[in-house]
Length: 77
Image (cartoon, helix red, strand yellow):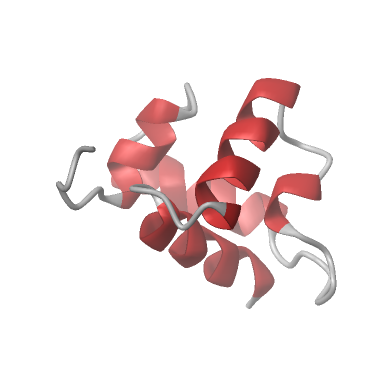
Protein backbone atom coordinates (compact mmCIF):
# COMPACT_ATOMS: atom_id res chain seq x y z
CA UNK A 1 0.00 0.00 0.00
CA UNK A 2 1.26 3.44 -0.92
CA UNK A 3 1.44 5.51 2.26
CA UNK A 4 2.26 8.80 0.58
CA UNK A 5 0.07 11.84 1.09
CA UNK A 6 -1.78 12.84 -2.06
CA UNK A 7 -2.58 16.41 -2.98
CA UNK A 8 -5.64 17.79 -4.72
CA UNK A 9 -3.45 18.21 -7.80
CA UNK A 10 -2.53 14.51 -7.60
CA UNK A 11 -6.20 13.58 -7.35
CA UNK A 12 -7.19 15.63 -10.39
CA UNK A 13 -4.34 14.08 -12.37
CA UNK A 14 -5.48 10.62 -11.22
CA UNK A 15 -8.99 11.45 -12.44
CA UNK A 16 -7.61 12.55 -15.81
CA UNK A 17 -8.52 16.20 -15.24
CA UNK A 18 -6.36 19.32 -15.56
CA UNK A 19 -4.46 19.50 -12.29
CA UNK A 20 -3.04 23.01 -12.01
CA UNK A 21 -4.33 25.04 -9.05
CA UNK A 22 -6.28 27.42 -11.30
CA UNK A 23 -7.92 24.46 -13.08
CA UNK A 24 -8.91 22.89 -9.78
CA UNK A 25 -10.40 26.12 -8.46
CA UNK A 26 -12.31 26.62 -11.72
CA UNK A 27 -13.67 23.04 -11.59
CA UNK A 28 -14.87 23.56 -8.02
CA UNK A 29 -16.43 26.93 -8.87
CA UNK A 30 -18.32 25.47 -11.84
CA UNK A 31 -19.60 22.37 -10.03
CA UNK A 32 -20.32 23.76 -6.57
CA UNK A 33 -22.53 23.41 -4.67
CA UNK A 34 -23.59 19.80 -4.66
CA UNK A 35 -26.83 19.20 -2.79
CA UNK A 36 -26.18 18.43 0.85
CA UNK A 37 -27.28 14.80 0.71
CA UNK A 38 -25.66 13.99 -2.63
CA UNK A 39 -22.61 11.76 -2.52
CA UNK A 40 -19.57 13.08 -4.34
CA UNK A 41 -19.34 10.00 -6.57
CA UNK A 42 -23.00 10.39 -7.61
CA UNK A 43 -22.49 13.83 -9.14
CA UNK A 44 -23.50 13.85 -12.80
CA UNK A 45 -20.25 15.33 -14.11
CA UNK A 46 -18.05 12.26 -13.41
CA UNK A 47 -17.39 9.52 -15.91
CA UNK A 48 -18.24 6.01 -14.72
CA UNK A 49 -14.55 5.30 -14.08
CA UNK A 50 -14.07 8.52 -12.10
CA UNK A 51 -17.17 7.87 -10.01
CA UNK A 52 -16.09 4.30 -9.29
CA UNK A 53 -12.62 5.46 -8.20
CA UNK A 54 -14.02 8.17 -5.91
CA UNK A 55 -16.56 5.82 -4.37
CA UNK A 56 -14.07 3.00 -3.78
CA UNK A 57 -11.40 5.24 -2.30
CA UNK A 58 -13.84 6.94 0.05
CA UNK A 59 -15.78 3.86 1.15
CA UNK A 60 -12.69 1.75 1.71
CA UNK A 61 -10.93 4.60 3.54
CA UNK A 62 -8.12 3.92 1.10
CA UNK A 63 -4.97 5.82 0.28
CA UNK A 64 -6.78 8.61 -1.54
CA UNK A 65 -9.64 8.95 0.99
CA UNK A 66 -8.37 12.09 2.70
CA UNK A 67 -8.01 14.14 -0.47
CA UNK A 68 -11.28 12.73 -1.88
CA UNK A 69 -12.96 13.98 1.31
CA UNK A 70 -11.34 17.39 0.82
CA UNK A 71 -12.82 17.56 -2.68
CA UNK A 72 -16.17 16.42 -1.31
CA UNK A 73 -16.15 19.23 1.25
CA UNK A 74 -15.07 21.82 -1.32
CA UNK A 75 -17.93 20.86 -3.64
CA UNK A 76 -20.53 20.87 -0.85
CA UNK A 77 -19.61 24.31 0.56
